Image 1 (cartoon, rainbow, N blue to C red):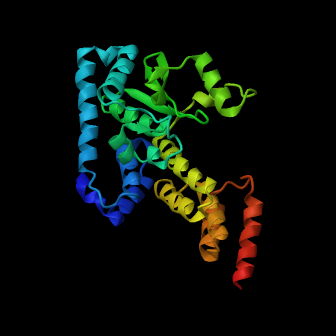
Image 2 (cartoon, rainbow, N blue to C red):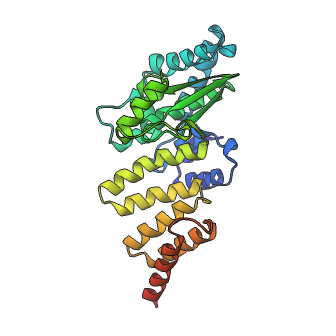
Image 3 (cartoon, one colour):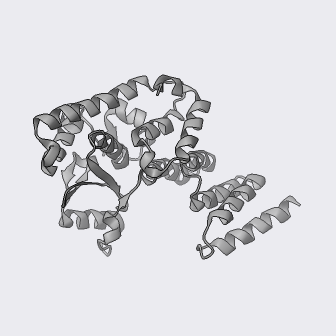
Length: 285
């Protein structure tokens, strides 16, 4: 792939839509994250970011061979942390956590700082380039990773230097995110696919726009999410709501139509959206 040609926004959007048509296990997650980042910086070439990702993969491979990471889960974790944390200096940005640059992979690579999910994508890239089994987790509020080897598994926190998280640490993290009454459940450590990781990355940006009452900017981010996940009914519902808030009535109706086509018959809120769509149509008439 010629990454330098991806600086053209139209080409970037075309590539993202192609990703939207791929099976989840076909998605190159780092490439997709860079393309999403390029939408905010269409004037920049992706070539040097591609080169950096290649270096990460090469360094993990070289150090993994030296340390015998082929058959050791502990060695794999040590290698990933040695490359990403010690060699390249990646860490979580605790000082300016809410800054949206922390969710743009290009800026994360420039600054060596980022959100848990952005840093997690670098771990996923480095590990999967070696064929190692690694996945993001469905943990609320804080992105975590799970590495598997044979019957062994370990959960690590990419935001905090790739430190290991045992059950006690997970419970403490959950309560810090969701309150003292929250209890750890099996679904919190269930693996998620590439598409869900990318949506989680973009959702961080979207939610910051919503918090700052910038509905138009939030909608623009949501549209990038629809490029890579056009079959997600909930995204279409949210797009319709944002369009209606912005008085884009025809676009809202179209988004709600997509939602109703994709949503299950018992989808919560489905009747409400159908009624809202009827009201919008009456307003147009």
